Image (tube, rainbow, N blue to C red; front, side, top):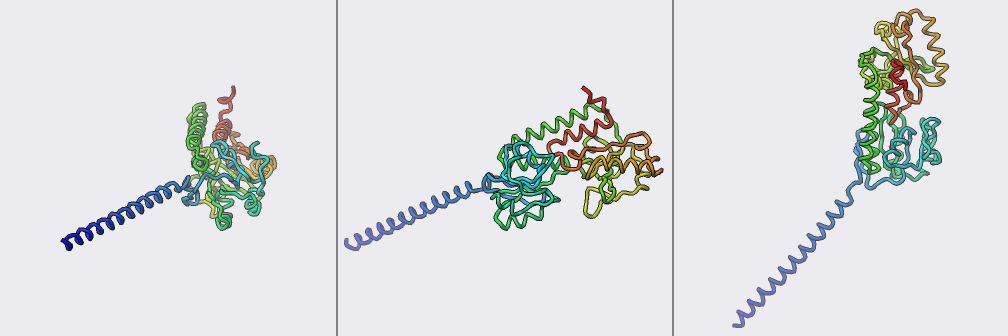
Length: 326
């Protein structure tokens, strides 16, 4: 009987130990679930696929944003965003950003001024300010690089900014509004396939703008054919090709658009003189028929951003002014 009693006590002890182990395991499992839930809760606020091909994870909604291009200010504000720092600009400064801290000129961003703003995100303009990315990231500051030349770039930019602010529907509403405005412009004009050429004038000379340029994209949105499409781009500028009078005469565009840097009146005077003095220009249909148009810099030199519909209307008005008279 004593042996049997000992066996029963031994079995009971094993059962108690087993129950204790199971209890501990259940507790650990619960901890693991809580840790998992905590990790899930710590997932990124948003992940932005930027113009450098990076997937930038934002752990929380950015509260202190600096932009390196004034063209980012309006679209960011339209989707509920604000900034603590922005570059100087004479033409693209909305009222809400006028009193914000300056971080220098768009071509000469002062990284020390950017850091002084204590940002948790800097939105960087591709093709102009990418060199800042490494320094900012080394200082623990997240960066998102956005491109904004073509209309598709602008729509991607709006969606990225809407993710940054957490206002995705505002982004889609803004895009839908721009699409509708462009459709309204196209509905006012004949759907003719004009053959156009876009010349860019600078102090260094002339270049031909390709479809990736702002003016090239605008002409494409109107359904017009850029005679320079397919030309080999410049090594340092994929949106432009070398200018050649011989090639231009051969392409013989019926419409000629001119964009410029510097003083637009000086550029116009210089181009007009060149066309008058060089007989080759007079053989081009656009020049012979007076279809030469100078495009405003605020819409065609710098990105028009969310004003792309205005750029489309401006170009359409050159050929069809009567269609836009009220």
